[in-house]
Amino acid sequence: MKQKYKTCKHAISSGQIAVYVQPSCPRATRIKGYLVSSKKRCEDCRSWEARK
Image (cartoon, rainbow, N blue to C red; front, side):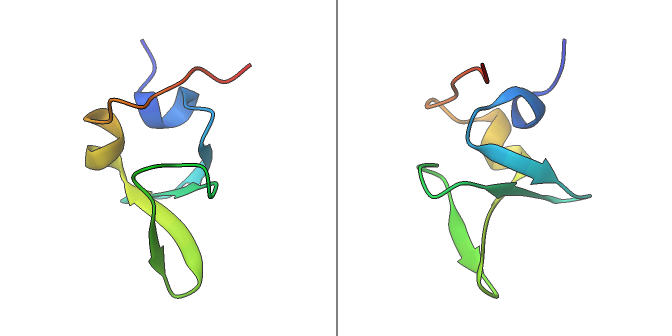
């Protein structure tokens, strides 16, 4: 099974630690002008939705 951060509709791309997300992500944090979430936060997210 793929990780949640790779299959979530909010995720744009992922790095080593952070996942770049869309503004609709409830777990997003703004760092240096980018909306990101950590991989750990994505795995624990209750708002995960599958990408179409």
